[in-house]
Image 1 (cartoon, rainbow, N blue to C red):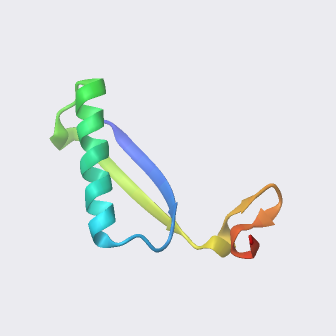
Image 2: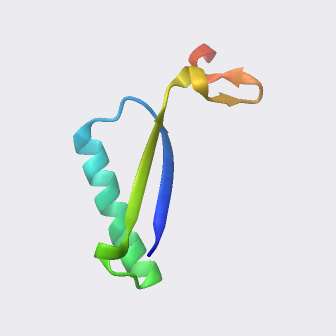
Length: 62
């Protein structure tokens, strides 16, 4: 049972998330030989103020 955890900034639409999980599921089935029913995808949405790269919060990026 592949479980895929994805971290994204907040703001994607439900339609975008549907398309994303469909594509990731299809890729997992094709590459790992798993059944679609066994693929779990967990989306963690994060505020830009709670994510930093190179010591700078994304909410403060230009």
